[in-house]
Length: 292
Figure (cartoon, rainbow, N blue to C red):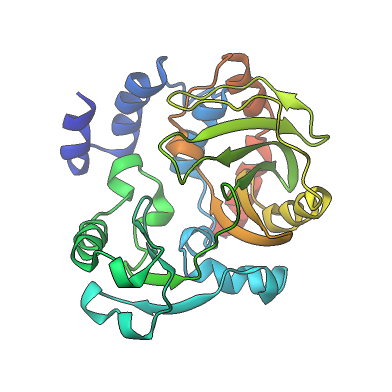
């Protein structure tokens, strides 16, 4: 049924599509009139919150200029180039290791660890497929609707072991919880949640494993918290991501609708606790200001 909805998404209104998909993916009925859970409130924000800055924040090229102004260019992963199509990519000018990403969606990522053995044809096929995809019609995240599809090349970040992502859930500029994503270079990605005092939280998400309370608190922990505050001010909710690369903090990305708002949490209480931190009253006031 979900694949059917994806295929015929453009035929449905936003509200009907989200109601149908929500019950199938999250497991309970979507209440847009009195949303309480985290996932419900993300659906409400999709429908009713329109901050003009949002489209820039989720564009994997445009957000870097914003981060440079807010934090400084030293916290941005190096760009090697940007192109409108795979045929324009100047592979001969790229280093032996690099990462290619589509700027307008999720999952359009190709990693090159050694250009001498890199499968260029396979990479082009994947990027072409993602260039044709409009993420808006999958999850109705309106900022993605008019982003120009492009391809960027970035520096490949490698270090001993697995490069970890530090992902902070921020509410009106206040980080409350976060998770560390590890193991992406293997077939098993683990997600482990912590509070802002680095206490382990037993929060589970479907399809992901946990390492447990074994990760050491990073030296740049307080720096990442302060940066997350700066980068999330003015947003009712945002997930702010960082890499801690060889002891240096680098900005990862913005996510305004975690998992599209279709991500169950276990125990279920966390869906409602996180939801209680999204203040829709302040959002309505901001939305009125944007319209005026």
